Image 1 (cartoon, rainbow, N blue to C red):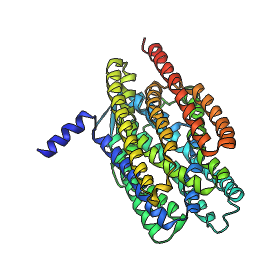
Image 2 (cartoon, helix red, strand yellow; image 1 turned 90 degrees about the horizontal axis):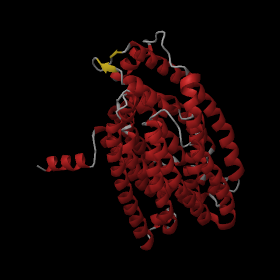
Image 3 (cartoon, helix red, strand yellow; image 1 turned 30 degrees about the horizontal axis):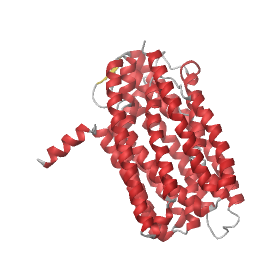
Image 4 (cartoon, rainbow, N blue to C red; image 1 turned 45 degrees about the vertical axis):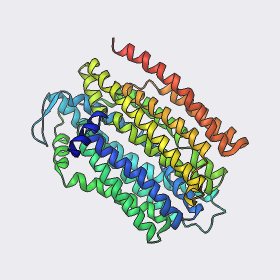
Length: 450
């Protein structure tokens, strides 16, 4: 009776198998992030905490090398899959042209990401080392060099695996990919906590990242997925996806949006590290990790529907498309608001009662501002996902303008008003993006669905 009641509740809020695994992964990430606060407070100094989170912000330049291709892969694969059917778990039948185009997509993305991963590692090793050497001069007692080198290598390996998961998602294997990511997150946290307890300091991150990559490798090699990918890879015939004509016109727009996204969402920590010091950078990093977890959990209702959105668009079933999207965006908005409120209350309680862990987060006024921005990002992000499933990137100009405004804001407000100026300027710019984003959504939807 209880199980039936739980299932009914989950069905009403739109939790299917794929979303359940995504939520589990993000709950572990968010909950693990909060538990990680205790471990970091106990086993890392405040300065080491600053390095720990700044590592992550710099590694986010991965998007400069991925260039939005993983998102494009999922959408292109889903469009071709709409004309194919499953014959068992490892074989696809149907339109021969679509199957051949799938093969060309798989071959292309594997080669692309292999090259990008190598370049990515080289850039990380050189420029990351220069950054920490220049702005960490006063922290000579922190051993960061070798952890950074290992982390760069492992992150490059992870970049090589990302197109495989994106390809599987496009085939409709959203639940399976979500399960892999759930296992990834769980093992990564277990290894991270264990490494911190063993006193491995900043080496804990690279070791945990290595465990994460191994989960992906084993989950693909020792399952039906390897046979499925092998089958598709060798189905290439005369029909191919033309990169210059089909992918590049879409990709460069996505790439610019993603690169702009780095300056909008990831520039905080390196700048705060350089201007305010490692301690404040650690507070910013801890706060952003929690908010990012909330954002990702709430966006699960949208992101797991991308293959479905793309299929309906390919078949021009716009009525069904809008029904699914409208339901999903309501669910994701409610989850986001409730989660943000709970997070603010918890941090307020910790800081009001002077628990040491509360000081590892930013002050409450800044958290409230960042929470407002997080909700807006969730809403605009959902609109963007819907539009990109049409193989278009209408948010390009908005993203570039926001990136320019954000860089200018961080520089000037940070210079005169410090961390409060940086967060205030960020929230103001994000709020302005809401009206622009809604206008683009309504106009493009009307234009494309005529």
